[in-house]
Length: 338
Image (cartoon, rainbow, N blue to C red; front, side, top):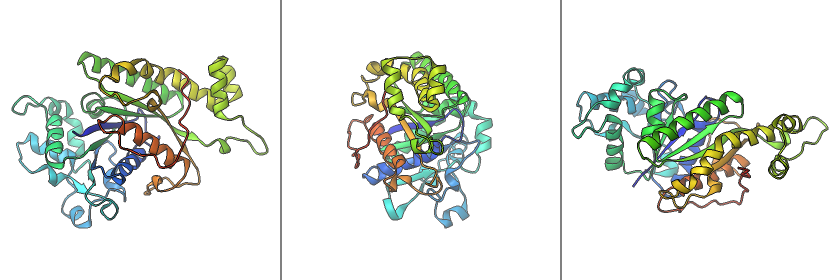
């Protein structure tokens, strides 16, 4: 059975799509079949990336994708779902990596998403559930990754509340990101509770600066991990912590506001995801300013960011019945204080 994973961020610019593509590539590298679906219909990007572009001949015909599928099914078209899916990175992964771009009618779907979501299809399943059913029946991926739009309305609500087994919540470290994500996750949990669904949530803080880049010229900065431990062992006021180590204090605040509810609900979630552990709930993506974040799989290198993608991929794999993902290089996970 395929695992449905939504990558979500309340605001843009936090590396959500790049993280999704790297995790998908890591899964494909270890023999899994993966499909990435671009449901960021307001600002689609998968069809523009060199990593996920279809072959030239396919682009020239039409770049049909998920929006075309939904509207075609709404009009009772029986075009096979495979017509909306394209192989990517075939020279590296063969037939194990596929992409379903936003398509040519993304704006139309955005305007009609409520009707599309509630449109009955035979047994009253809505069109998004039909999308999942056809992906599973005819594409048969082990993992399907949804790239969600920001906010929490329309398609973003469908991506986060209705479609996933796992939500990867990618959050920046400013108040807009933390406050917005805090409210969004609370709404998700309220909805899942109301419909009796168990969905695992993994928190990813991103981008986190590298510690060497935090030191002022000629100065030395106290390691973030030391600040974490002091906040745990001898709690101090956030204002004092901000003066002492702004990044460490902000990471601690994000844990207190965003991670604590996830830790509290872990025992209940483990009824469905018994392999998930406490350390799987928190990840940090450390960005090296010298590493270009363009059309390249960062997971190819031994950089800290590549290793952190491996940890995230392993945590997602633990949500499946078969925990087969291997982290090739030892890397220390971030400390959890809550």
